[in-house]
Image (cartoon, rainbow, N blue to C red; front, side):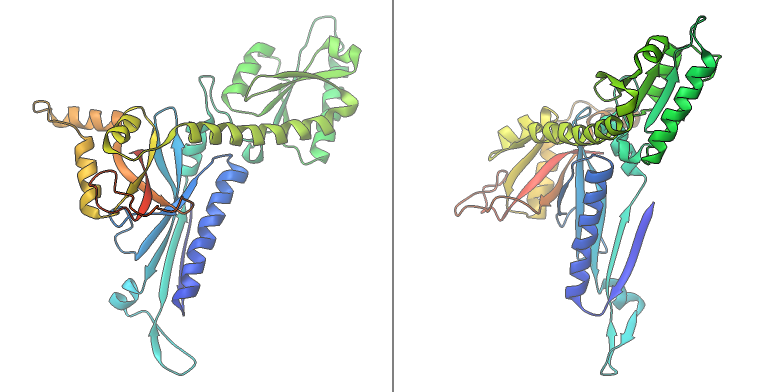
Length: 345
């Protein structure tokens, strides 16, 4: 959990920091968690109530077809300074109210990473944030030199650690190699090293990627270099795969019918909008569909949990210019921007 609150003399400095922090959060998601996010400004309806404006990073979970707010950076203006009389004395000895910001990045980032990259076998953790990047597993057999095998693995581990690779040797004798493979797969360790009698004779090891289960036989001499390359490729592949799916699951629409179709298929939709609160509210209400009897409170909660709630996720910072004459997809008023919509947690 990380949170910041700052006060500034001038509005321009406060606005610059809001964007600077937003970029920092987006970089953490991309470079460390391998999660693509969309940066943008919240609509008036969705912004933090006490802020002049709210900037956010939005992620997408394809398994559930929902967007999720990843982090926020709020420009509070002088709203709280006026209420609580937060003042400073400027160079001219005049009392002035501060311009405030607040921003936060929480443990939901781990939930987003887990939901985005995980699969039916368990966690898939990007190498840059994995507590263990490589697990080394000996394949013991009755006729093998167990002491030599363990000694070889220790030397390999030392080589990897000299390259700042985080490792663990699982040489416990109470579990089979197959059990260990499954155990470390569930924990999401990016790379598994298998070392058995045949590998000892060949002077090689077998490496198995967690993300795509690809297998490589690598010579012990090239182990450190190859592990570094594979870990980097896993990190990049996880991000590129997630970005590709996000782009495939985001549809540009111009009318309400195709908008509802996209949302119904568990996609996000980018639509030209008038950006009026009344219009936004009408779209949200329309997405709930006609009443079907009188469900109980428990049934309503279950339905909401399964379907999520439609909302305007953000006004993307990077978007096409609204062409002259473009109409709002929902109310046919003149469009002023494009808004990213989706069902959300």
